[in-house]
Picture (tube, rainbow, N blue to C red):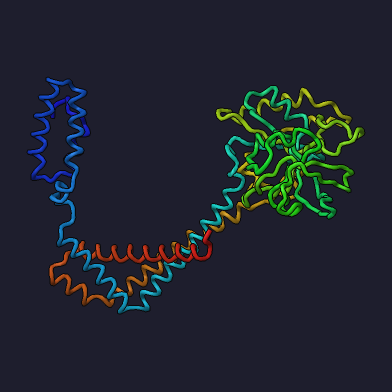
Length: 437
């Protein structure tokens, strides 16, 4: 073949019938060489490609011997008739084979849905791959303690000194609150206190208001469910809510949609981190290694968390003040991806209403799903072998009529595929009925 002829020209041989290939190739190559001289190689290649594409049509494909002829289609149709008639004749064997496959596939799909759900926690946040919680490791009484909190001043220091940090926020437990609204008292939990930058780190869908809702310490952000509970169908924006147990009043600045069920934190409301503070409460941000809240950071897309981890320790060493027992010398940090928090080990000072999963259960269910498929396959194989021991007469007749060994094997494979397809359709149908959403 001429060196100027592109490699993709060989594709013609895959769909063109052999008895036409030589003539078509010859005509196309003669035309190609003629156009190379008159119009240039680039334009000639483009026209050759278009000519090859035009030959990929039904009139050419139907003359290809690789495609099934009418007789072969009749044979496949006959295979399906045999499968149907045999299933009607051997109802018990068919029910057990199909029932075993369906039960195993249905169980597999249920487990797959469960595993998928357990693995999806916190992944609804946009760019969750770049969100990390900064945890601390402390050594007390010669024991290593892993905590979900760090000094509250660390976030601002990381933002100022580390280019990898795009944004950060500190989240702490606000506790259960008693709320007075429309002369009614409500006791509500799952409150968090956070900085206004919480909306830059995590994904919340606003129904009303915007990200500036927590810029002032007298604001509060409600979830849709809590807003409906407090105000029914009224617009809660700019309404006042008093907190008798905190001796203060907050104004509703925004309403956000409820977080999905695969969120590790069930948030009902968000208040500013400095809400209800008094003059004698001390500094809001300090380097005290006591509980300072959960620090979440969002990194730039190209940032390496391992490089950032190496930068954090010198910042801690530089800023931690000496205490009487030098506890800060035993403080180190590590970054935990947001998606790993749900399945990760429980840490001290996590938010008290955090949901926690168990990776061991997920592995057990995955093993169970594989085991069920293997057992179902073995059961189907045994029943099929037992069934074919009663089909010697049928196989003998087919051989006498000229059936080859590969045709009989093809029928067995086709029957297996047919049963699997039915089992999948039944399993998916049951799932759709049980879980229409």
